[in-house]
Image (cartoon, rainbow, N blue to C red; front, side, top):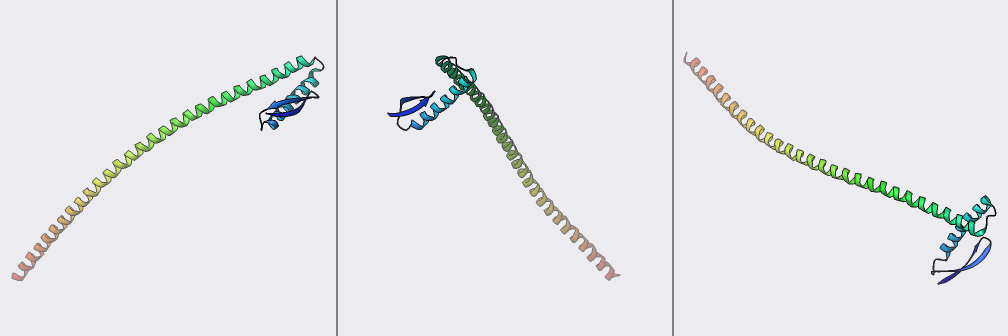
Length: 148
């Protein structure tokens, strides 16, 4: 345990605290002394005990107000976290849906490629047959023309 000499309301006090907490105790005491003196200046001479009680009530009021604000902010943060999780879930669903659509489109593209290849083969076959028929017609015409 460490001993710390502090000043409160212009009086010296020797307080004990855990080792390493000396500076924290001095800061807390200084804060309390400032609050006390501010109320003393504001309210005048109403007695030390009453002034200590009012100072304590003010500090506790500040504490409860801060605690309420922290609770409110925590609730807001929880709500934002919930909304974020909902958005994340929706984004994943959307991505999965789009992935499925892309896969379906790729399947359709593959089917179209097969049809295009079949159509090209059929087209080439028709062209070959047409070319052969035209060649036959030309050959027949030439043959007939030579005969005449």
